[in-house]
Length: 189
Image (tube, rainbow, N blue to C red; front, top):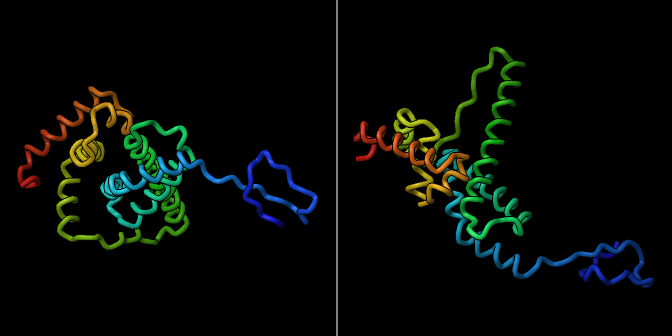
């Protein structure tokens, strides 16, 4: 098999001794735009996913999947890619959690005496203790809206598009999360 880098308009010649696979290089503008977005927003997406998963390994995998999907659909990504990237990362993470939960239920159903698997060691024990105490008082949606607003600095409209809420729903959720934090000053000191 001969692999040739050529335009699609060219026809294979009789001199080719077999199957010719025509490859087309990526559009330079597309590649440059994607590379800029990747360089500018990789850390944003990684940190967001790390906040969702609390696992650096999972965060790296999900971030890589997010940018792979972004590259495949780059022509359809909006001019401001951060909300689109974060929504994509959230959807990938949610799909993984659902698959893992189904798999765990299947495994536990087959082995009734088996105990649950232990979690992987965390990056920082102090951070994990703080995050666990924070998780005890905030709902997952409240934690997520705080991360999107104060860590990613997204607008209400962008947060709404990531979380599937209206702008007023985002403001309401954020107000409730801040009220919970105000009632637990030991967590923010």
